[in-house]
Length: 207
Ligand SMILES: CC(C)(COP(=O)(O)OP(=O)(O)OC[C@H]1O[C@@H](n2cnc3c(N)ncnc32)[C@H](O)[C@@H]1OP(=O)(O)O)[C@@H](O)C(=O)NCCC(=O)NCCS
Image (cartoon, rainbow, N blue to C red; front, side, top):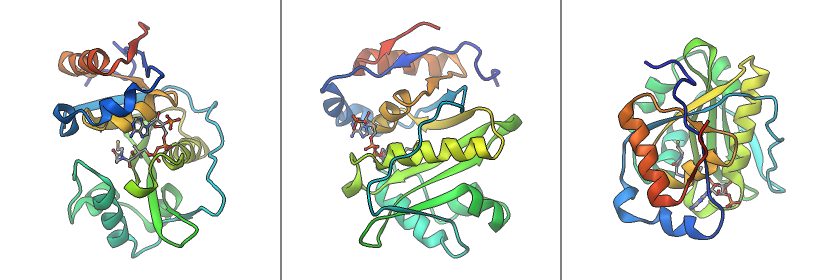
């Protein structure tokens, strides 16, 4: 695997109204090609701003079914199955409680989740960020992401990465606007970024 940061390209999400149109582009909507992004620093992450009445709570044993229901309701790519939680979050419940949270709306419904997980060589990993479709575009995803990045810093990580798929265009916009940069691990992955830049109007900004 290529060392993190080597051969990195930087992109920034273009402003303007084109992004909604791009997200519904059918040929990209079921694109499972994997992409890695990194956030090289965690000192500058803004405080998460959750709307009034929304509350974060940590994972508690027994939340597995809720997590799966939430993820399956939220993920258009439907990548989670019955064993995903156990495969992804193996570890002590206390460790899970430090790193995995659920977001509760004022009506008591669970509407989002994210994990401040850990990856190879001390990297923090933003994992399984999800917001229910009827609660999207209200700033919750950004707030959950900032929570995860700040929690990673509290837990001693200096930088973070995540793996996503090319079809997650809303997520890609969010990541590129919150300090993440593409970190392609292969020529094929670099080509995907080139394609996304060409098709979605993301502006290349050579490192
Ligand atoms: C990605 C996701 C978590 C974003 O959550 P959200 O609550 O809708 O995000 P926010 O409202 O905080 O939006 C933050 C920014 O993300 C980008 N964004 C979010 N949804 C977008 C969309 N549908 N189209 C284009 N950009 C979008 C925008 O830049 C937005 O900022 P803006 O509203 O100021 O333009 C949510 O779309 C989701 O759960 N998607 C399905 C699961 C998924 O793909 N998760 C990521 C796994 S790697």
